[in-house]
Length: 118
Length: 111
Image (cartoon, each protein chain N blue to C red):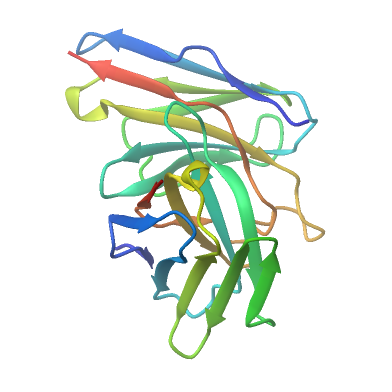
């Protein structure tokens, strides 16, 4: 059974703080993703990574950065938290496709971190 | 620009009846489509998928239909059960492209 865990279920931070969200998967997946989920907007991709030390911007990378030093761990960093970053953050992982990075494979999601920035 | 749209934010059906969730997409390059189900306080879980070479895929009570010319897909749940109450996300992807998700539809199945 694939397991994706996220370091916190709920987090409250203050504006301007640096925030770290950690994600760990135990299935040796190459691909890892960070999304945020907002009402009426669904899941929007922030960053993804298809290998250690590799990262690619998604649709909404502004205000975020990521780190992938080990295959199983993908961290999302809010450099200076702002109130508009209050959201549910979801991490996911997947196997790569036969053509290298491929989005055909189902993604396995963690339970999410609800971040509130005051 | 939302490339995957779920225009119904919510749907309520009676237990035992059919639930039909709809999804439209705009990018003609999408060729693989997935449905995810999300319970409160949990991450989305994969439910069913369909490749663009098919127009139907069935898995137990769940069937996904794809109409490529209309850029439309739907998820049918028959019969609906109270445990099916969740938020359903439609997702679409193309080779070497990111997966795109819709806004979700909250399904409530009443006993």
